[in-house]
Each structure stands twice: as C-alpha cells, then as structure tokens.
Length: 433
Image (cartoon, rainbow, N blue to C red; front, side, top):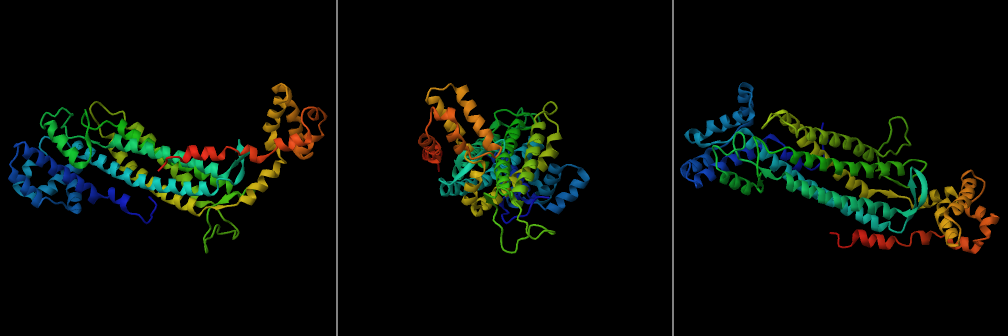
C-alpha cells in the first residue's frame, strides 16, 4: 500500500479521472489536427469538444464485456458524442493514446519530484553550513580513520543530490516523447504532422521513430534514475541510523513529545524514518529492474510491459516523492551532538594522527616502509590499550631520533588536518542554486 501523506498532487496524476482526461485531450487534439488538414469537418471537432465526456463507472461496465480499456473508453465517449464520434481515433492504435499519456504522467511526476529534490537539497545545505567546522571522526570499514567535520559529511550529500537533480532533469527530457503513428509506427493512416501537433500541445516531443509503442529503453532510464535517487536516500538514511546507535549517538532523528519508540521498552528512541527510507528504497530499486525487463518485447510490440507499468508508474513516483518529503523533514529537525562527536574521536587515544606522523618521519628522511613500521608498532600498543598514541610515540627511542616532543605536538594537530575544509566548501557550494 502506498503511504498516505499530505500532498495529493502527485497521486492525482495517476488517478483514473486524470488518465481519462488526458486520453480525451489526446483524442480531441488529433481531431483538431485532422480538421486543420481538412481530413475531417471542422464542425465535427466543435461537436466533439462540446459533447465529449466520460463516466468512469460506465467505462468499467463496458470493459467487463469488451476486455479492452481503450475501446471501453472510446465506446463511453461515443455514447455522449453521437454521430461525430466516427471521426475519433481515426488511424490510431491504442498505444498511441496509452504511451503518449504515460509520457505526460511521468513528465508531470518528475516535475513534482524535482521540486522535492530541491527542497531536500536546500535543507541539507543549511545543515552543512551550520556544522561546517564541527569535527567528527571519519570511519572507513566502520573503523576510526581520520577526522573530518560533520558539515563535510552533509556536503557530500548535497553534491550527490545536485547530481540527482541533473539526472532527473535528463530523465524527464528523455521520457517526454509521445507517438501518434498508428498500428506499427508507419503512419499508414495518419500523417506525421498530426503527431507533431498533438505532442507540441502536450509539451512533448514526437518520438523520431516508434513501432506500436514508444521504445522502453526510455522508461528504463527514467525508472533507473528514480532508483538511483532512492539509493542516495538509502545511503543518507543508513548513515543516520549508524550515528543514532546508542554507542555512537552523534546525531539522531527528532523525537516529538508524546512519541513512543517501543510497545515494550519505554526508553526507546528509534530511527524509524531512516529505517522506513531504507525499506522503501528497495521497492523503487526493484521497480527499476522491472522497467529494464520491459525493454525487450516481441517484434513491434506485446503487452507484457503494460501490466508492469500500471504498477511501477504510480508506485515509484509516489514513493520517491514521499521519501524526499520525509527526508527533508528529518534533516531539518535532525539533532546533532558535537560533544559526543568529540568524545568518540578520543576513544582511540589519538590514533587518527598516524598518517600525519608517518609523513613527518618520511620528510625527515626515513623510507616509507621504515616509517610505517615505527608508527604501526606504537599504534598497535595504543589499540591494545597500553597507552595513548602520542605518549607512546614520545617514549619511542627510535622516533625520538627524528621527531622531538614539540615536533610531535605540532604534527598531531587537528586544525592542520582540517585546514582545507573552507576550500572544499567553496568548491561544493560555489555558484550552486
């Protein structure tokens, strides 16, 4: 079941009423184009526009008998239009209507998702700038590595979100192609000028060539792009989940008054939004695989893709829109604990200076291999709890030959390790809108 949330615009794109409205609009636009070419009477177009309407219940009734949704729709509309209905759907095939409508729906969905992406990007930027100089430990393989700042973590998210915005713009452009080309795409009973007219009116481009369908590599690219964006959300949410662990607690989701984390344990504050995001990302990724499976169809067309798209179209777009909305709220209200970040940094006793010491020894003339060996043996002692890393270094007689205590204090300086944070921020945020 698609989650409920307080923004119905995207869901409305996929409701039957909107779908049938677009179908009717396309049929009328085709008639307009044909009238301009004097292939049908202009008076017929006036009559069609005046009388054309549909009733969803009636369409459903007819479809139960004919087992064909477009025929059921046309029959319903024809019952209202009367004699002029013979000019509707001239030279067309069902996929002309279905695929052109799907292009409109996906293009409109992308527009709303882009709006949410930009809101998320802006929320991340605000937090990144706020925490630009808050030091925290970097981790590789989950193990303490070297310091960075919490703002840098978020700047990575910001830059990735900017790339996702560009990806979705490209995917929106790629999917915004319609077709009015007839049974196998040869325009045997409808002129290409009709297709050009209809697509222009709908804000689409005519597919340069089609079969009975718009080729599904376009759709695969679109849904794969949604999956990449969902993957980014999964990545961000996974980081928050790790940071909220009790042993870490460097950041956590906002916990509102009256909220409860567990039916059994009153103390629980769980990263439920982040966990939900990770779960929903799996659905969007799985739907991308389904879209890729749709690329290969029999000859000029079969309908194995159609049933799939009726599910993944609304599901992926609505889910991703929902995910972005939830993540924006999470980031805006995220609770950050700089003191815990600093405390966690010191767990290793300064081991995060190991590379700084290694490089200082190399600059003093040692080979990299010898310097590595000297630093590592002291690092392993500190790892095993036999003393603080810097203290052990100062006591090491071999290291003393190259680095004095004062020199070690100068080398082991977190400000030096973070000296280029401002430069990174300028690279990331310069000229970004």
